[in-house]
Length: 245
Ligand SMILES: [Zn+2]
Image 1 (tube, rainbow, N blue to C red):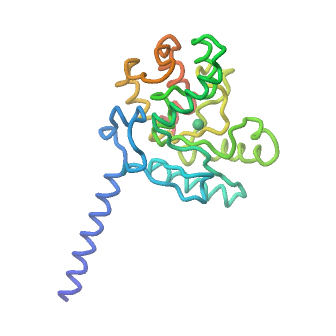
Image 2 (image 1 turned 120 degrees about the vertical axis):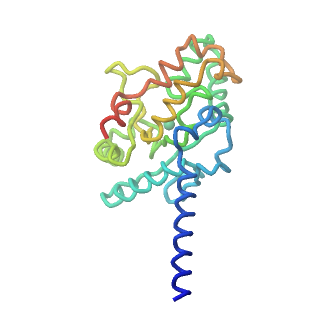
Image 3 (image 1 turned 90 degrees about the vertical axis):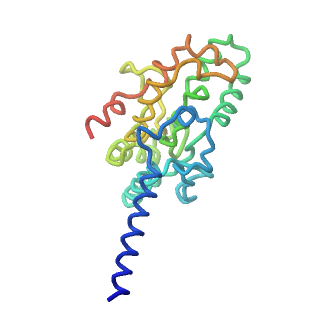
């Protein structure tokens, strides 16, 4: 009898601890802070982040725990429907984004600074302004829109358009004909809006142009309208995701 009772007490404690660990590893509004939103942290040793299983990725990729759980659910459903999803980019920190930005900054050195930044901004974010800092956004299968217009890629894209919402994922950089501002169309970039909307909300309340600094061309951020035009330049569907789902 005593053994049984102890066992039950043991189970209750373990269950309680597990719940505590899970809740500690989830993002809530209070656990978002400036450096987390700006990509100035090490996602490899942050307990909000997890390394994805290589079967889901093309390289070593980290995502926010909650986002990865949602992705795995989506991956399984896609697989059952004959669709293979592969994450080709996930979390990137400030330094990694700065490397991308400055590589392109050098590539377009023949352009005047404003046009130079504008050219990079067709597809790449300024460090401190990327959704990839948050661990909520993933690039899937190919970084080419044309890939998603034929054969296998087309099937994958159609599957995502039809099903990704059910798992919380939205295409944020849709075509710009409807008046969306910011980055060009990206059929590969999907955002887990239940969490990303919290980060965006925090960004809009707490981040200013003074925080967008320490890389080539950063002084142009305000003139380029980076916060309203790019950081907030996402599809209406994504913006409304939380209201409708
Ligand atoms: Zn992306």
